Length: 428
Image 1 (cartoon, rainbow, N blue to C red):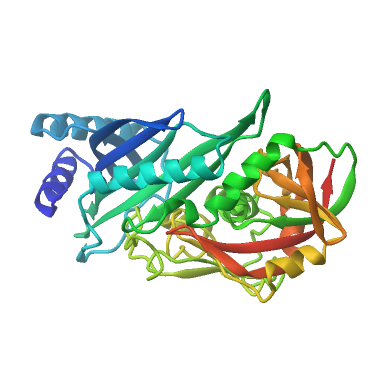
Image 2 (image 1 turned 90 degrees about the vertical axis):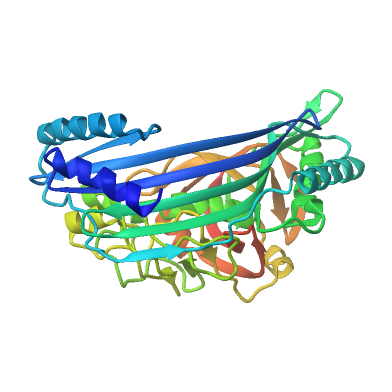
């Protein structure tokens, strides 16, 4: 949404009686090829416009999301927002960003090359089925995503950015006779279409593993051992491992890390950054959705907690520093100094994990779930694919028990991770 229209909407909200107002608008275009039963079965193109409007009065806040932006819709929404605001519970932490600058960030806006998308996706399907005919693809997509995002508020702030990228999303399993493996999935962001998709980011190994898991073995035993987490699984598990750093836990006082800023919470081998401005990323995020310019930030550096995930509201509510960014797109777990093979050779007994399925950790960090698409390690060798095995652990202990981080990393376009070895995990 352009600056003029944004100002008109904000002025209308204030004219109806709000003291302050802010908005966040999205214009999204998606061009998408879909695969079902191993075949590209349709192409679709969608557009969606959305605006989230906030009103503030006497420490109260109300917000509404709209898809229609006519003058009549805006007037009606402004009136409704004020009514909602007046009936809301006052909270002194409610406020808009003090930013008052105007910044326009021109990203990597591009149009989809449909013919090239189709050729690359078909080439992938042909090559994947040639290598691994027992693999079955369904609900898989090759998309081009384009968006324009804008933030504005009544302090005079107006930020806008655009971004475009391709995304490969694959959902697959493998079947032989009546035996079928557990499903797995893969996601990769690309700034352009080049090379063979099947050879990117360890995808070939994932497909191979899926076939091997057709004949997986049940261990039927309880033991405590080591856990080697693949880059894909590590990025997924980081949400659980770092969940206590988010503002909902900090606001309620239930985070196990409430008073740990600047202290050791993990092995000194662990380094995690959020890097929305990284040159390595397929696209950048230049501002937060609550109206602040982003910066790259360390979350954990050499095992020391450096940052929480906390918004402007959360910062005002808790008195803790506001995060330099809140992007969920740019997690970067830094590599270590061991090669993967030596990590495996040092495991007496353990699990090589590629996918974890479990609930959110408890307030105390207790977590349990199933290791899927995984392998059993014994005496330094990967022995066999295992049927789903239960894992129980404590997230705080897991961070402290990291014993090795690999040199090898996998880059998924907007997130990067190595392999990580965690000691003393319970399996059953």
